[in-house]
Image (cartoon, rainbow, N blue to C red; front, side):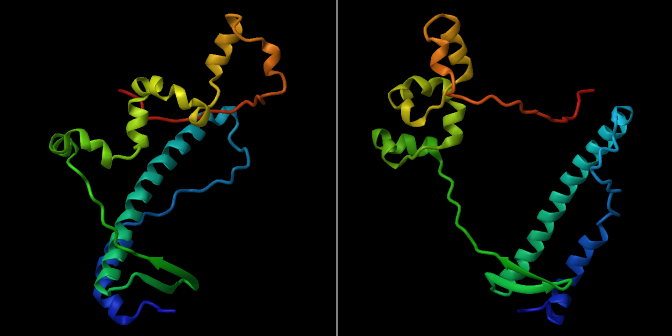
Length: 185
């Protein structure tokens, strides 16, 4: 295993030190013991929002530190690095990848009808265009579809399907959806 040697510390120490100095004292951590009763709801929400902010800041800091470490590894021409940090073995991988972004309108214009020959399904675009694509997918819904609760309810309510057909063919569980979003002022 490689430990961080003096050259590494000298070469990248100042850059790492800059980020280490920015690390604030950790937030007070409370055990999830249910100590937040309904009378402490405001405290619980205040703490939740503080954790949200801290998580965002930590993710940004983590990305900055990744960049520092990646630059170090690139300078050392290392793709894999095993080292020890605070008596814990750590394996780091930094493998360059090529990302190609196409000018789609330009290619569509240049290739004309042949443009479709170079395409593959893009899930993001599929979701964005779902209302337009759904009728085209009807012939293959058995492969890519899943029962819709709303469609089942509508079919039963309109008499199109007998409710007995669904007995024992589903499970119903209660699931809590929870989100805290910044409000509008």
